[in-house]
Length: 428
Image (cartoon, rainbow, N blue to C red; front, side, top):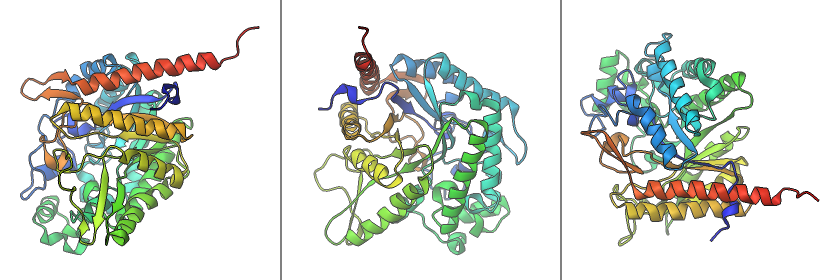
């Protein structure tokens, strides 16, 4: 057991959400567009989600009341720039009010500028392989910063740009541009957009080398645009880094995935202010590819092994390769059994503490997710939330996991403050 004082006084204890997953009716986004196509990979549409767009004030108050010190959320490019070059003052004002609400309740806002979803019009321009995407993203970041940058606590440019490469190692996605027309959903998207199917490249499903180059260029251009307004603001991106392991016969594949998914993105992070690490478990490779969870081990709702100790491995990997401060910007468990979630969070917090004890600069632990919400292709089935939501009434009910982690935030912050006072020079 670590000492409580391992956690710094200004450590961020939080929960996270993403705009499209909680706001509802994100009509101008490429994800809404894909949800409603024939052959969609989404099991159901997002619809009203949990109506966070209209209920953010009570939601932010609830997060603060539970004891958290930070809230990570995303702003929706598709709302702010619904058509190319048309920026909505009303939507910019909306997100500024969200930031103001965070400050009113003592929460440090960690803002993600792009969390998977893009404007539909960007998809028609080549999406995340398009030659103009980096400059367009930077322009959007500039508009956001001009309107509300003074209120942002930490800035994340892109969420999980490396995820498509991890999914490709599972045999999901990875369709070459020249073959996209043979996939019904991409063919339908191309027809409705009036473009060639080879150019349909949404962020979540883009794992080409051109996609890597565009995402990295967008991250760097977006960072520059943010820093132009706030040189002092911490800026980084957040990475989907699994603890990559192997069994006999899978060593070569595991090393290839580790290199392509984790290491090259960590290397690309050098020079940033921090790197966000988002880990849910380990990924094991054998001679036949991705190995399923071992028989008899506890699994989450998606059938993945429950393995919270993966977080320590990915924090240490990030520290070793990127050499940057780390913020755990997502970590959590999909389960209906909240006692499992509490146990998972306890183990994860100890992973962070172990890294802190060894001198690794970890600045925060932000759990995924604040609310049971829309989990992309899985729809509303997986329950990651620390707060339950009745989607008929939109009633929020905090789970024991929310109370437990909120108490940790308060107790550990108080102990860190006491330790700081005890270290201060005493009057003679």
